[in-house]
Length: 263
Image 1 (cartoon, rainbow, N blue to C red):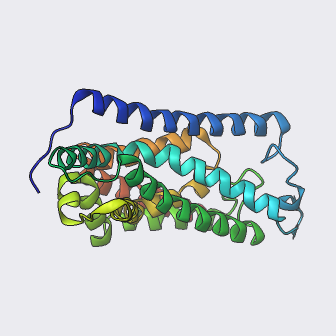
Image 2: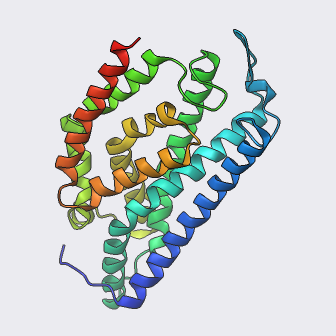
Image 3: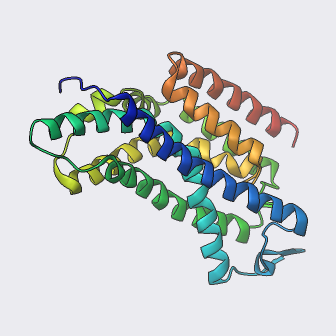
């Protein structure tokens, strides 16, 4: 597909929209974390159904599950939407060129909505995983691993995955927006949504193990969340991102083995 160019005002509009969504998501997370600190609990609402009382753990209510799903969904928007900006700019440039040739395409919002939809699906899975870990008494009330073996396993799995061909293949798609658009192009509104969904799938394939580390450092630890966000952005955008990711993977493995050796 021939390289298309996007006027400056369109680039500014896309940056403003995606950065605005990201800021709103982070504002929600910061507010939630502040409410948690003030209440001295892991939730600003009554989450007694999740409280640990010795070895007795009460089941979640439907409201608890909905609240946690919302938290994960907003968190994923805040973490992952910034990394989709390069791909969205390429899509917008192609869409603008097509419109100029009399074949208008779906707006960029449709593409990014597909991307967010994939991470929303992941959020549902993460919520279920958190429920299972909570019921197995592997998480503290602050949503941090309270098992050294479990925490070490998260580090080792994430580190090993950084070295796999699957990780590298997904990362290559994320690091090459123009190549992805040309190789996965679909026309129409449905096509734009599916392209965003597919890009989200590659992004998920690249980052799922890193997201598991949220259970190691704290699901609502804002510094930990920000650190993973920056790491993912570096992997996707900077020239040395791929090599840096493999080096970081080796560090994760070493840290995991160190934790295991101290148990």
